Image: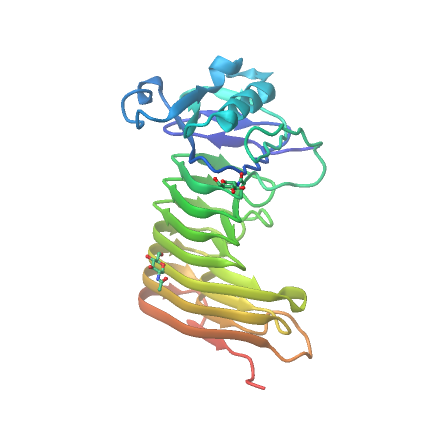
Length: 320
Ligand SMILES: *[C@@H]1O[C@H](CO)[C@@H](O)[C@H](O)[C@H]1NC(C)=O
Ligand SMILES: *[C@@H]1O[C@H](CO)[C@@H](O)[C@H](O)[C@H]1NC(C)=O
């Protein structure tokens, strides 16, 4: 099957996953830091207390030919069983081929290799606290590039995520059931949402992002299949969007319930965006009345050009 290539990179090409993407399920208490960089990182810019696990020390070839799945799993396992905060180091300037793998926690537990079945999320962080993800380049995931689920205290910065504008479901960063998350300085060009912010997101701060092509920054969809969803306290600040379908969007399905509240979209520049500002509470055709509450939403200092005649669409549900 045609699987995707993922490139993790601090500077140029560092890591490419082949055959299938990596599905990293991490569940750990220790702070975790997946990074790529050069050797000089060690000792110098990394905090000295953190233990470094270099994939090469665990048998990775990094020649773009050998399968380095095991080496990555080993490095991850070692990091995971360390009692100290650890770093998995993916050295700069090499290509690492890996198959689809699941790196599971809680730490010290075994690592499972999953068969390559359906199009997976490239990188999933699951149940992490104090997670820091920085300087990665993710390329052509089959679906969502990076998903943050059930995490608290997360800092994501300087990611470059790229997939063709025509590729379906290739969200950049997906966040759900997570609290206290900062996303800064990422460049995301994909075929779906730049960021999708979903149920259970609380205290999210997004800053200095560049999006497009793709579907823009979206809160929701919330409440699909009559489910309950809560999103609270999301700030999206200083974002440039180029040629995206939406700019700042909140979408809820009819029939769901819960709330999306305390949301700020500010300092956004949009160029040629089809729906620059859109709240769509009737996302799904359904006769069931909508119980989703969207409240306290601020759009401030948003400018640019709209590709459609309506720059602002507020399609709210009837309050019944
Ligand atoms: C994290 O640590 C706390 C106490 O130190 C423990 O109760 C909890 O089960 C741990 N969580 C995981 C996922 O290991
Ligand atoms: C809202 O989230 C931000 C982080 O984005 C946090 O600093 C702030 O304290 C939160 N506000 C409330 C009322 O919880």
